[in-house]
Length: 253
Image 1: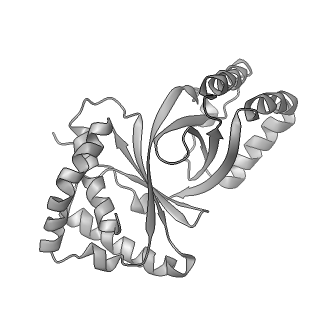
Image 2: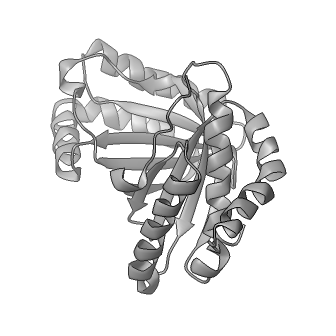
């Protein structure tokens, strides 16, 4: 995929296809990380905003979320029900692209030289996530942080056991700090887990983490030493939610 219009064709199909399934919450996400050169950022924002207006007008019923990261990239995540959604993408993208061309919109020309992509599929792991139902968690998250843990091959079972120790520790000590664990099921450098946290701002997240470290630092350090033995490498990406670029599809009656 060499232009963004093709990516939005994927969004169109996945948003509609996902709703055709049962109404339970999806646990898989189709993720596109779009890299933009800093010198092209102003032009990219302009073209992208115009692009969204065109899709709202001609290709409704989209469902996706957008973030800008500190990695010179934008993240677009689409909830999907299964890999069957992806199988259907390529059967419909040319048809949808034709619709836009007939409306006079040439996405390939508009986005030429502005960005490139990485694509992956991640699956939410409820067992290794921690989302306690506490009043302190009732915040409007705008800042997100994703910690990428690249596991040593074959170490998933041992790493999962330690993650459960973390979860039990937080639960037993009534800690309200939340995290969600996602397993990369399609992408590069597998096995990889992504631990996502969020808060109303980066400052708020850092303050919460500092308070936890001051209170439970010794226990956390022991768990981290145990967990890190199963890692090849780690990286952290920060992201800021873009509500104006995110869309929630309307469910047909």
